[in-house]
Amino acid sequence: METFKKLKQYYWPFKHFFIWSIFFLFIVTAITVVYPMILQLTIDEVVIGGNYGWIPYLALGFIAIMAVKGAATYIHQYTGDLFGITSVYKLRNVLYEKLQFLSFRYYDNAKTGDLMSRLTADVEGFRFFLSFGFSELIRFVLLILISISVMFYYSIPLAIVTLITLPFLAVVTFKFDKAVHPAFRSIRKSFGRLNTKVQENISGINTVKSLSREDFEINKFNDSNSDYKDKYIFTSDIWAKYFPLMEFLGNLSVVLLLSYGGYLVMSGSLKPGELVAFYSLVWYIMWPIMNLGFIVNLFSQSKASGERLIEILEAENEIEDKEFCVTPERLDGEVEFRDVTLKYSKDDNEALSNITFHAEQGKVIGLIGSTGSGKTSLTQLMTRFYEPVAGNVLIDGVNVQDYSLKSLRRNIGFVLQESFLFSSSIKANIAFGKPDSTMDEIVEAAKRAEAHEFIMELPEKYDTVLGERGMGLSGGQKQRIAIARAICADPSILILDDATSAVDMETEFKIQKAMKEVMADRTTFIIAHRISSLKHADEIIVLENGRVAERGTHEKLLKNNGPYQRIYDIQYQDRDKVLQSNAG
Picture: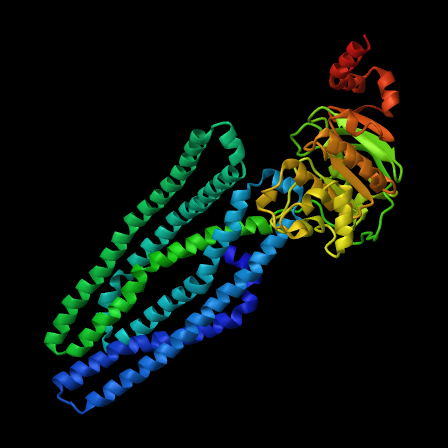
């Protein structure tokens, strides 16, 4: 029950729905137990006793309690569903909100499909138990207690003999729960992995097809699907072992009832109608106990689901606002790194080592280096996507850890190499970072990003709704919309992470020309592999293995005969050969 205690804050505020549901459930259960009593009166007083005048009253009474039971059942089920639905509505919102604020480090190890499984299948599994399982468990308990009370009212000796198998049933049920819970937890995990496999395949379907790896992916899916199947079969095996034993113990009670009950009727200690009522009542007890496996099943599934939800709720958010943080509306954009070292985990090598530099407001800083040299890592420290293990990152002379995350990130615009667009209109995508943008601001941002022309050629222009991840646009078009989005947000610091890698040289030149005006009053960091993208930067920082190898202007670095010179030679040697050939 520890799982339900931890999640209590999400469902207990709606306990009034639960209380009303249980109140009417008590009425429904009490009326259910009245049926055998009416049957007993019909047999003993009407059929055997000959009191035929009772028939109209018994019939009317039966109709009346049926009507009451119908109304009570409706209210019980409706309020029970309200309890479950409103509870998980709150829980699902909290889970989604938690996912929005968890750090990048959490997502480095998380699987998208597994997270989707938790927010859908696991939340729904927990809801089903709240709506149905909880009340069904209580119904079983009430039905058993009331039935036992009526049985003892009719005959104490027969009740004792009939219920002698109950302790054995309880032990079997307990063992069943102990065996089935870990099995259902493994099923949930396997389902999360299966979900992840499907999600990854659909997202990467272009890569799969381009490399003709359909058969390989099918085999990988078969492996995941087979694991899911095997875990379900294992759980079914547990169920198949325990359920027949529970059914045997239930039927054994019936045998004891008919044997000893028949003797009591023949000896005159028990009326025939009471034995018939007894037979109905014993099934009111045995049926819930035999089906307790179903409730245990539900409980185990919901507990396993709840545990997976708690893992998200209790996930440590390493990067949060301080209690008293600075919340400026606008930053100037002066950036300084002081002996900054970054590790992504304790066991990893240093991604950045002793990085020190100062970027004045409005300057353009170029970052270049081989893949894995730490270019993107450096910029992610400015926005506090990660925290350094040593050193300080300052903006406008203030440690970034002293700013509120919202105000800090609102002032820093990112354009990534792989641009993500949402399944909404182009207009909404451009205005995503600044939802109150006017149409003029959106169009102006698109023009500066060299996106306006192709947008106006689309059927719905700026109202064109994009497919998933910008489906329907080329890579270069998606990147230009992403650039427009960053421009529209009007950040103090602009970070272009290989932002023009997906566009042709002519478009890149046009974007750079338009961006000069954009970059004029803001600090800009340009991450690029092509020297042409950053040779006009005020300062270029060359990174190697997470360290600053050299820094300076384009002209100065070419004279150093260092890493930058080697990169330049590789990129421009063919052009220089052509020029020399033409000159010859």
